[in-house]
Image 1 (spheres, protein in one colour):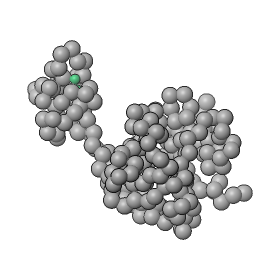
Image 2 (cartoon, rainbow, N blue to C red; image 1 turned 90 degrees about the vertical axis):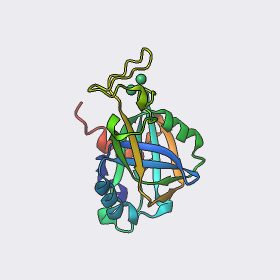
Image 3 (cartoon, rainbow, N blue to C red; image 1 turned 180 degrees about the vertical axis):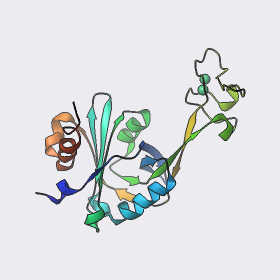
Image 4 (cartoon, rainbow, N blue to C red; image 1 turned 30 degrees about the vertical axis):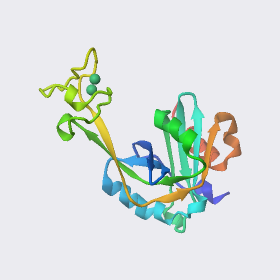
Length: 194
Ligand SMILES: [Zn+2]
Ligand SMILES: [Zn+2]
């Protein structure tokens, strides 16, 4: 048995952001609590050996599985990450633009309401905060927009980073060829109740 199959799988994070920062693409697993993100970094990712970090993107239809693992200097606290997510514009941009390298950082995701933001903050409906009614229900006042409530989010990146140089995009037919992906799908997909 490879050591890989004994590493617990972790999916208790809210998503993954892809951002340009420090001249390089950043892959950013997102958490809602800063404390949670920094202790996970401290306990697990800090001990990862950079050249061993692998990120796999297994594309299935409109979704993809984000799968990440590495060898650790402290194998007993090691974790492997996975999350099934919908493909997004930022994901596609990362896929095209990463050039074989990225930084791994953790991020804290904060939802913002109309009271929290400046007038030019952009809502998920694509219109600015100042286009939304400041009354009780902050509906979008923009011509024919159907948005009923201002909402946007902000991602704060933690400073610490690791360099990832092993990045692969795969389809379902390739999954047996990659031990990390095969293990992830075996443990997490086939164990789901159907
Ligand atoms: Zn809106
Ligand atoms: Zn709008």
